[in-house]
Each structure stands twice: as C-alpha cells, then as structure tokens.
Image (tube, rainbow, N blue to C red):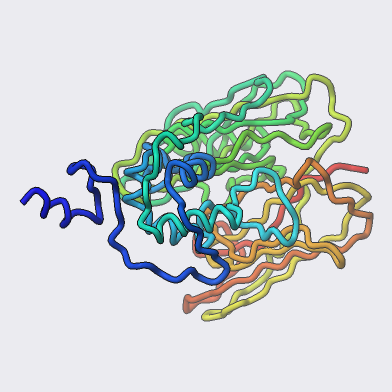
Length: 413
C-alpha cells in the first residue's frame, strides 16, 4: 500500500518514500529555437542559473509568486519555470538585444534557456547534491559608500480591496548645499508587495503640499508622481543591483530639494498586504562630477487611440538641443502599450518589442559608454498600442488613459 501511494503521488514528490524526484510528464519536442540537451541535472546545471537569475524575486517573502530556493520548490514549479523561460517572459528583461546592449541584463542566454527546458523535459532530475554551487547565496552588489538614507515619514499599507496600488512618498535628504548624486540603492520594506520604484526630484514645498492632502504617508499616484517634477533620476525592479551612474557623471540635487518616490505595490498572488516603508540609500560625488547629467524627454501628449484599434502607432519627435551623449533611457507607457522604440535616422537607441507596463526602468548602456548625439539630430519615439475597449483613449494619468514618453540620461560633450 505504501509503495502504491508513492507511485500515485510521483508527479509531486517521491521524497517521503526515499526516492529521487521524477516527472511523469510525456516528452515534448523542443520549441523553435530551443535545443534539447542530454544529462542535465538540477544541482550541477540548473541551480547556478536559478541562483543567479531567479532568486532576486523568487524567495520566501519575495515579489515572485513562489520561491525557488530549494530543489523541491524548483521541481514543484518546473513546468511553470520552463514555460516562462522558453517564452522569454522570465526573467523580465524587455529591451531587444539586437538594438543596444544594456547594463545588468536579466535576460538568459540561449544556453541557459536550453538547459532549463532540457531539465524539465527529462523529468527535472535532481542529480548529485555534491555538484551544487559552493556559493548558495547570490553575491550582494552594493554601493562603495552611502552618504544618506532617506525614508518616508511613515509606513503605508494599501487598501484590502486592491490587488495593485501606486503611491508616492516624500524623501527628504535635507541638503544644505547642492550635491551630485552618482548612485542609489532602493531597499524595499515589504519585499513581497513592492513591484517597482521610480524616483523623481521635486520642489520640497510642492511635494509636501501633495503629501499633506492625505491622512496617510504619501498620496495616490498612478502613472506618474502627480505633481510637477524635473522628470526622474532612475528606478528599481526586484533583482536590480544598486544603480551607479556612468563614471564622471551625476545629477545635481539642489539644496532644499526632495525626492518623490513612486512605489508600485502588487498583490497578485493573494494574502494580506504588509505595511511598507521602502527606503533609498544615496551616494554623492566626493568632488563635483566632470559631466553634469540631466534628464531630457521626448513625448507625444496629443494622440487619440481609436476604440478597437490594433497596432496603432503614435510618434513623438525631439530635436537634440546641443552636442552631447545619451547614457541611458527610460521608456514609459501604460497598459495598452505593445511596443516602444527610440531611434535616430541611423541608430536604434532602444527597442522594447513586447511592452509590459509592470516592468519598466532606466536602462543604462553597457560599459558606461554613451551614444554621441549631435545638435540638431532628429530623435524619434514610436509607441504602438492595442485598444480593445469601446472608447477612445488619450494621454493622461489614469489607469484608463495612456502615455507615450521616453526619458534620456544625458550629458554635454
């Protein structure tokens, strides 16, 4: 009877019967572009990939819907993992690599995709635990030093009837003199609920007035900070390392200015919300940077997306105001977006062929190299949308509105 029970539960686990895990799924031909490999095991081949590329989100209490920190957890979710990896949905990395290369890419190599697919196709075998990587904890990347840690005035818990929420907070670095920000690190409070963060410099009086309008810390702010700001200085998503601006560059925060932190909270995998008080560590240049960076933008804010439209393109144009360099970009649209692309006449600057509102951030070019841009260069932003609704959609802050916008992290020549 005990043996029969083991077999009946074999697709879940043989552990209780002293057996190794074995999948009962039938073999599936490799999808297009995927190569089937032989002899792949979890401890030798898969765990290093999971450790490096998945555990930024998929840990107990993390924003991922399930943890992937043990063989049992990986086995139980192996079909979902394979589907997401082969379909390039996970790890989330949106820029196309045939346009430009960006820092801290979360995209898996084709070898890694082949490895995970082959492991699952062969029944997700454990292999020999002795083959496990020596470092069981992903290495921690940190700022070289921290000059200030800024935190909201209080914690915040989204309303229980919400599954997603956007809330902005005032972070006051209390600057007595102008400082050049050259790096930052976002420290999420409720890791299982903090989906992404954007940071905006702002006038202190304007930000504090917005904060005073609500009884809780901060204010609701879907789509943007909801107040006038000098654009954004960057963002964070789970798994992102601390941001270090390209060498010899930085953004000046004037004395008395604050940061507005927009936090996207997500609770798609259920359970009660947790109180959050996400903080940010700031790194200032020890001496003034050689190249003062600024955030420029290109946008189209006067479009109308017809009801029922598919592949509807909206174009924004910018004439470069002077010679300089672009080191990074942050495209932004809402939930109807399907593709975002920024280019000049002869250079692709960024291409996101499969836009996802839930995964957006500042992307900095690989090796801290900026793209040179001459004064008068025409820069084109293309935003493509599907509108399945029965109403026209225009620019706006609401969840039912849209945006077509891209920020540039730039310096002079």
